[in-house]
Image (tube, rainbow over all chains, first blue to last red; front, side, top):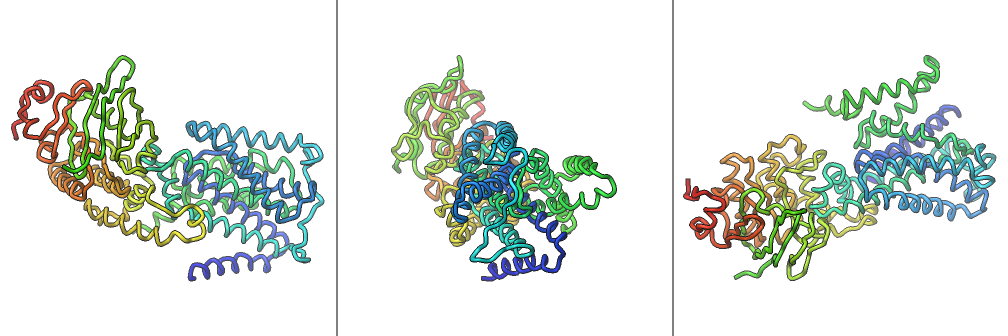
Length: 306
Length: 256
């Protein structure tokens, strides 16, 4: 009961804020929330389960493209289109995870890198279905019960997806499954000796977090009302990794802080250094790995220790 | 005599040209502490790893609770109720002591992923956490329950290995040289804990190097040399067995 109230309060606060913002800040705000949602699920995969995958942003793209294609190319009803989008993410995730988790971790990195590249190729070569290099545009979210959901009201949908993502991840993390994921990350042989099916745990973690990325992608599709291949390239795949490392790998709060910081930083840096902010990101990541392997959240922890 | 929990029959394992385990038979009974000793390279660790499912056997059978278990994966063997410790401590380094022990209970959780997501698993979680706390207390680490495992001493880490294995509710616990690297005070405590485990009716298979630790503790001792069993008997018989002395002990068996 107390827990439910807390989630409700978080929703009211996060969804209420954009009503006080102008259109521009609302746009920045909700894109930031989507990055936070993505970083949270990626942190579960990379930080908690220890799997180095580069496909997370591609799954975001699978979700975004699939909802648009199902709705506007194939004219599938909205609820069914959402279900099919999730199902597609799950199927692709299983197809990648089942063969590659049987091998050592390095092969998952390679397989997911290949998937991310292949996804962009498919988008570019997809002809009328994917819209080719120009992508798809000129669509809008179907009315729900005769109501048009836009502006801060749509941001509330994003807040809901973010909190849903966090809720799922926290439930998993605080269960036997979350402990099994950490055990697999820390010492797979010992995990197996304790009865953890290492391959199965990895496949489930990969599939669940990829599906969560896909759901975030579906919501993203109606933020700018356009999806195109350059968005889902490798730059952003690496950016999620950087967000988690800079914020604090393995920690939900760390991932959220890292995502918000690295998303907002270019807005402040671009007037100063133009597009060279990417260089600064590289420096930040190196600094985090070398000097603060626990990330920004590590400083917070250290300040609380007596 | 209590029933046998684990039975090895005609077990053999070859690594290239080396016969690591040769036609080995023995059994472990309920509540019994069986010590397995032998010089380096005698096949102790290989036998241990075959039982734990890390290696397959080339010949022979391993029967647990009357069912053959050879060829099962380590996680399946753990689920049946054979839990092990590692000679070199292998904690899950990003977790607390209590959470490490909770991982040991992994196969005992009944709630599936859906009930976890729907929040129906909190009773089971609380019950297992209480059980983990009791096991942490049983090995004497209560004060460190919420500590990061990386802060533990080597000896404390060894005790954690045992608590973690016990959380899996084993019928048989495999201890791989648990005395190695411990101080005399820690050894005494470890001996008490191992007796306590056997008193719960759990079969204990103990691979050990340290004779002065093992002989007073074990109910029965199996001696290996070059992969084969050269003696099987009570500790007193092992102490005076000339073949054992020749192979391994160099006559130093008299209590210090």
